[in-house]
Image (tube, rainbow, N blue to C red; front, side, top):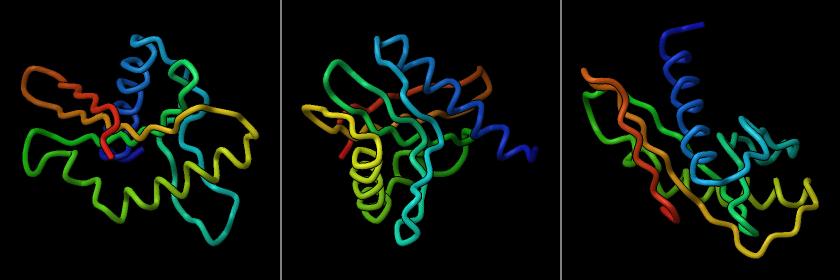
Length: 120
């Protein structure tokens, strides 16, 4: 496994720990749509009460731009479409679909985790 892939995987593991510590139930990880015309992946899908949470996880080292800046308007639109596709395929009924971003930055003193609920 490449170092970048290992860092991303570790970031997703930290994100799942954060979501579960907040009382959410993780339903899916690294979900890819079966619809060929809708490429992409959802990092984490969770339930927060009756709400569905589509969570994008961005992990970076301490240099450069913020991981939150990497969730561009195009990425947001893709995640919205993917979230609706996941709901169609799962058959799950929810009250609200919320889009969260978890930013993980590796610094000298370890990892900093920032969970933005309803990021977009």
